[in-house]
Length: 407
Ligand code: NAD
Ligand code: MG
Image 1 (cartoon, rainbow, N blue to C red):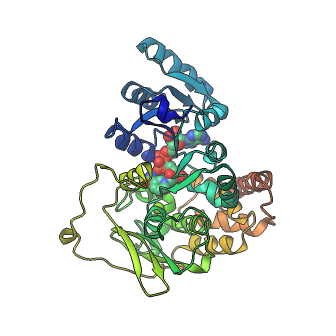
Image 2: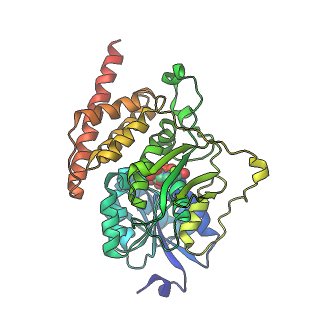
Image 3: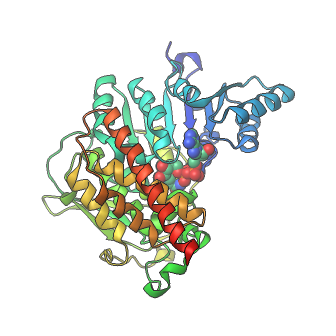
């Protein structure tokens, strides 16, 4: 049965990673449109309190906790409160709520490679998939595009830049399709909190400083990625898959105000841009309702207040992660998955106080130089190299810790 029939015209939405920054913004937009959407399932890794609060407010049919102990704790609280929500656990629970027949839309908002399997499950089940979780696309974008073509799933980008590019694409465009008439994609980025910081003080950067983004409020992993510009590099790879272009067709432009979210340059000289305040509820509302338009709760853009829009070349010397991303994008195969895995380990080690900010790119470069990458011929081939890259990165972090401890 179609969920629309089942729920008197509403679309049933599963939100993978509902307790995170994107998840919370998604629930905010959905709650503004009870006549259009119903929250079918919400999920989190282990934040029992937050998921419980979301169950009380949004009354989903299902709630999934990846951690089994957290799932037990949530079940007890749900029963005590007399809610009807069914609690499920583990990766299997995530995959189940991503593909249930009643579900029309899946918001993929888990952070990192952990989102790969449940998101792919939603794609295989032919859902409308709202892709915030960029790391799986970086790892194996071709598998997502192929599976979407097979199942009829609709992939809609949530990353603000990719959502902007999608909005500037020709009418009828869909993810992964070939297109003509386009000269370049202009991928904008704010440059992060350290765009102008004295390079000699970069070693002293603390996790809290790295997470204090000037324009966007986001989870800690993507905030660190924005500070190293790894995020822009991952977005380059993401754009290549979503818009079927080679890396040399994507130009990165630093735009500190984060008002233009990206642009598309056409052969006739036209450049189309999408503008808005930096608030993820705009791309979320766009993709939820596409091709309709709905209220998102985002304040109207006041161009007189913005007054000025600046553009700069990215600084590859200050931000070595960018060049590593171009290298991975051009090499293809499993190298983007290796880069992503090494970055996930490096960022966590930095957030845990084990390595310095400048060590992040060193870990990634070490892993990329010491591993031979392979064809990304299957999901298993990608996952094998992801696992090897994590092991190599952890060993490198440990070796640096030993050096620091001896000093
Ligand atoms: P976040 O850290 O705020 O939230 C992550 C969510 O994933 C949480 O609900 C958490 O419980 C869940 N999670 C964490 N580890 C998990 C695991 N191992 N298994 C299952 N669930 C797990 O992250 P975020 O900032 O909301 O970002 C989510 C994704 O969206 C990332 O891939 C990020 O790159 C992308 N994105 C975020 C923004 C933004 O503004 N926050 C913008 C563009 C893209
Ligand atoms: Mg982005």
